[in-house]
Length: 205
Image 1 (spheres, rainbow, N blue to C red):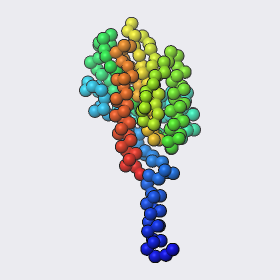
Image 2 (image 1 turned 120 degrees about the vertical axis):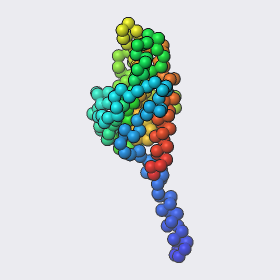
Image 3 (image 1 turned 180 degrees about the horizontal axis):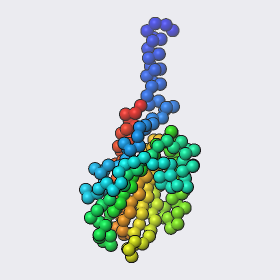
Image 4 (image 1 turned 180 degrees about the vertical axis):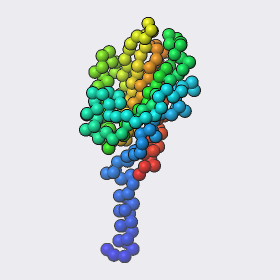
């Protein structure tokens, strides 16, 4: 086959083998700080930055899992912490999260990130008093747990969510009054972050 027909087939092969090919999964690259939750994505306007966005290591969510996550292809991570200042004095009657800590870790591949989520889910479940929670569909797979404690004679709870989008592993940890904070308040925030990251995958081919 020669001439225009051969040229058309070559062009088609190049087109089909380009960006977005099933054999070349899309990867999210760049500084993980660019994927962290922003103030505008939080559930109420009274949050402020308590600890600014900063790089962290493979033990950002569970120090005991750091070596495993490194083998899974951990590359970089970042975290930021938010605080609802007005709620601290009303802990006994507060509703919703009082603190929110967002973290994003970038892995070399989606497979490595998926393995990391599995490891982190197991580690979170193994913590004393942990109660596993179902996130339902969240990104490319998620998991959540709650842990209870007492602070100044008030029952409090920490809810931790971990999920994957492509080669990113996200985590969201929230603290609040037991009975005033639940997973349903956090999932819309996680989904907003997920949507932003998924939009990035569509532009990264």
